[in-house]
Amino acid sequence: MTTKTSRLLAIALSSTLLMGAFIPAEAGQASFVIDAQSSKVLEASNQDELNYPASLTKMMTLYLAFEALHEGRLSWDQKLTMSENAESKEPFKLAIGAGRQVTLREAVESIVVLSANDSAVAIAEHLNGSEQAFARTMTDKAQQLGMKDTVFKNPSGLPDPEQVTTARDMATLGVSLMRDFPEEFKLFSMRGFKFRGMKFRGHNNLMYRYDGVDGIKTGYTDASGYNVVTSALKDGRRVVGVVMGEKTASLRDDKMASLLDSTLSSSTATASTTPASQSGVIMTDTQPTK
Picture (cartoon, rainbow, N blue to C red):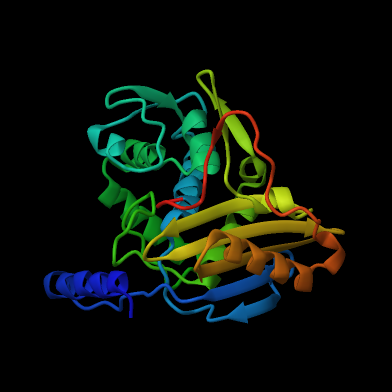
């Protein structure tokens, strides 16, 4: 057991004394691939073991933002104010300063491309008043969607010992986003965006190296390991795959590519591995939480 895992379990045990018993997760390797149309399970390994979602959490934050859009509680031009709490969420953020505003569209695009923690918190606070209240809504929605083993504690995926999920549940969320918000789901294919004169490039390298991949989200913290949920389309067949708990970003991406090869076709993979640098800020996949 690593020192970091020991610390994590110590925190979990301390929390148990204060908040009641729960089962702590561990960064174990897991994978799951499902046919998005038929719901047929195509590959599964440790798919129901508890893991930490890291920034895969933001998929649910965006699900609830898209739901609010469709219900008229938000608009794309809606102004969201960055609170001091939102501004404090390191390391990935827009960092415009507490009290300043972004539009919902800017917040959503920054979450999709940069995994911006401050934008996720701004959405949560606007819709529910606090991260804690929004997290309860996130968990309720997860249960409604059939994500029976998922508990959310914040909108960003920053470490919390009680924020847990499974590979199966993350696939369910990916399919739900695609099914319930097909137009908004297209945003997950964004490879970069412009924000107030600056160009930013995303860090979902599978979209560059594997033909047919069109999203959706990566995630990493020390506790979770390297996670990804991926949507891919080949010859009219769409799959949603999940890989969790890998040791490096490259191992995670290689694992997903292998899963896509086996569930789609070997001809799908391209020869390239890492995309060439583009103009703008280059984001790497080595820091939490993304």
